[in-house]
Length: 304
Image (cartoon, rainbow, N blue to C red; front, side, top):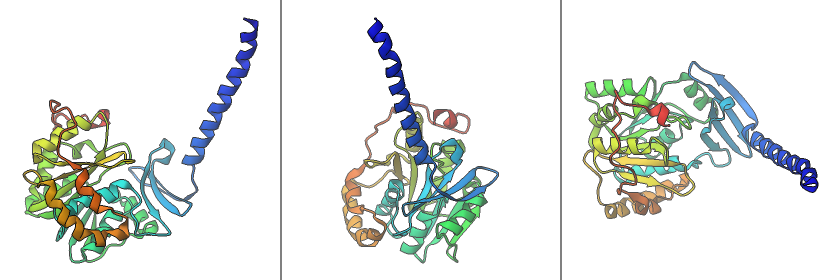
């Protein structure tokens, strides 16, 4: 007993030291050099820069993840899995003439789309004017005659667009803040409004979580509105991308030809489009008996 008692302080000391080392390591990773800070009515925004990579973070003191990152040595390269994955929507509509992007971040998706399709009309929806300011100042985002940012709640804009009869060939839903998707942008009613402004051959691409308590509810909600959709996941990504059209999606075998066509144009952005068709899946990996999210039942905040 005496021998064990004497060893206890040594053991505790070792555990404390290991715990302290882990804490210092995590702290070092989260406290990257900050080159800019911006405060808005919605959040605190920080821009970090380290080892050739510049990133935008929201609410850094709360430990939120990067919203967008840019490789300063290769600014065209899409750093995050989900930004590259979102371009899989082009397999279903490879020449969009009108694009809607909900959620700006650093602006990488709309900038890629305007480079690929310079004649397309691109509307970007961002509720926070401070995000727009930071994207322009630190992430090379630029508006043009064909690329416009609207500082507005995405649901408000989409509802009005539906009333005006507007249609879009490519709709990207990316109002995502690391661990949170606004609950009013998850409901059946909202997705019906999105569907209303989708052109007959248009495609909806939604960036969301690869796993969460919300996963089953979100999946049955998209299924209720769009029918069968592609569920797209990649190893190493904590995201999944939902790809949907008006009435289901085409056979996966039909996507190989557009992948070959798009491959040369997407290489500059590090998008491995040739491997995407094989990774698109329509088989439910969720509980299909779960309740659909509605404006009256939308516990998105709790489920996230």
